[in-house]
Image 1 (cartoon, rainbow, N blue to C red):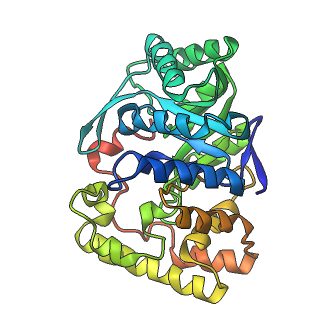
Image 2: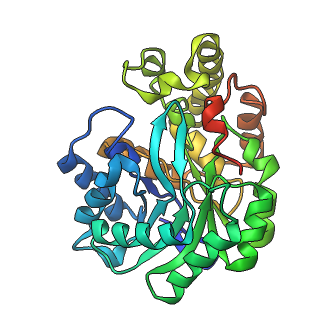
Length: 326
């Protein structure tokens, strides 16, 4: 698979989001999940994304087991800063320098590694100056425990202030054909500063996959049921938009998820999406998107199929939105 650069960090063009192997998307099997990680590495999908809060540590432990005998073949990213998810999108955050050090040591132990390639602040703590949080993270780079720094879901002003303290390699935020506000508000600043972008939920939390029946009939325990875009009339309108992408995928001879990922990859050479899955078949479908080239006319057609602002409903609840774009 082709490589991309996030700051000075080289990663595979597509990464693997591991969160769903431990939480929110229904039951998962550890043995199967480890098999997905191993197959990803075989395919060249070597940029692995986890966080300390996913499954309350379970996900880091799982990823650690999966890479124990192949650490040198992956770029390992994890996050800290969310102490716990309270519910309804409410999160308790901590960006204090003391917590940075504590959280990192726990992550290193769970992952079974000496160094983390990319360490993100998962959500900004509004009570702590970003300069203090990033300053503490930078000290851990000097100590050799972290190679590169990242931020997640911050606004342009915060990104600029953080980058002035220590180079930020990557900014992780929700960004997809379905959710494009980021492209207008933060992406230009990231690219200006030389900060790479790592879109999570790059296929609209599943809306841009080929399985619209699942979107219509989400299990009762699926966290998407609580998100505005998946509720009531919003869901119907958004499925209609997704069906346009399905139609375009047929004409292009690829799958809807490959259209969504190829579109995102085409937005800039310093963008590396991290679609998540816990199934080998879906992983292979995702990885194949890196080989899909869209010409300018095709890109314009895809963009116009889901016009900016056409998606109904916010991406998070009002409570959840208060924790992002800080």
